[in-house]
View (tube, rainbow, N blue to C red):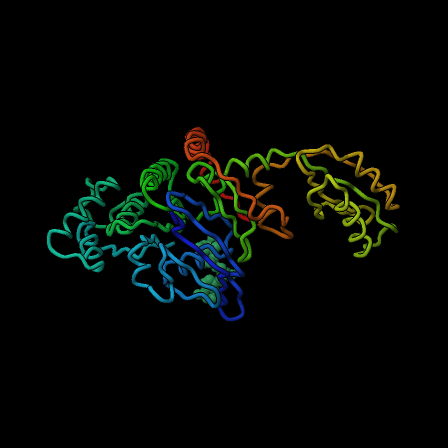
Length: 361
Ligand SMILES: Nc1ncnc2c1ncn2[C@@H]1O[C@H](COP(=O)(O)OP(=O)(O)OP(=O)(O)O)[C@@H](O)[C@H]1O
Ligand SMILES: [Mg+2]
């Protein structure tokens, strides 16, 4: 059985001189709740608008539930419920009027309109505010109206652009529970810059930065990676007060060649006399002796070697700024949904207290 619901192939998007997406590829399977994580301007909204046929890519294509975005846009729109970044709600309308309007736009008539609204209102717990004007609702309730509009045609896929943004912890928690329960029967993509949010809501994370996918992983594996030890190697400049790019490359290459080292990056904290390198080992190996030996063999002077532990924010920043470790992309291992769900429940309370720690680069 082919259960691929979303397939993006070599998506590229240029807005004039701005290259917003570069060769974006991914697949999303039935039943996945995928977090699309990235800093401002990374390309999250652009990707979502392409998948929902609001804009066309400059290159590449996508299939939604088997339908091509260029060839079968109407089929695509039938399969998808979309909550845009800023929901175009009509503030002067009553909630009921608005949902009726959406149901008619979706082509429903007569009793079917009522039936669809009843189901969507039940799913999003909007019963109490159905006769209120949209402008009188809190942001959390407005977000529910946005979700109800996305659900009205009972789509198999939901694409939610920052559904939790601007909500207080209580409202965010309610919307999160709502998304989880909706996600049991559907495929969901939600975008966010909040790392904690992804951890509690999603079974899989795609991280995007500068228009490229830089990681595809489970939240647990991302967290494991965060617990890893890494090392800051401080190296003496070849000549005092002189920065030499060639020397920098030479040291970086010598460290990269250590077999138990995964990645080497330039660390902040250089002075005119010292250069610092951030060394991430494979499988949590202690590579201090290897680094020392590389310094001796390479003829550079090691002034300091410090062990650090990466936190999750550092992993995210490492992935979304500067060079990206090639070993991180496409490293996803599948895990049981039940496991992920249980672990997520555990983290939910932490994210509630952490709601505003969005990780922006
Ligand atoms: N209509 C547009 N015209 C020109 N440039 C655009 C347009 N829409 C987006 N961009 C640019 O494309 C890049 C990606 O933007 P996009 O809105 O997809 O990012 P995002 O990840 O959704 O960011 P945010 O977290 O701020 O919502 C940015 O550099 C942005 O400035
Ligand atoms: Mg956006």
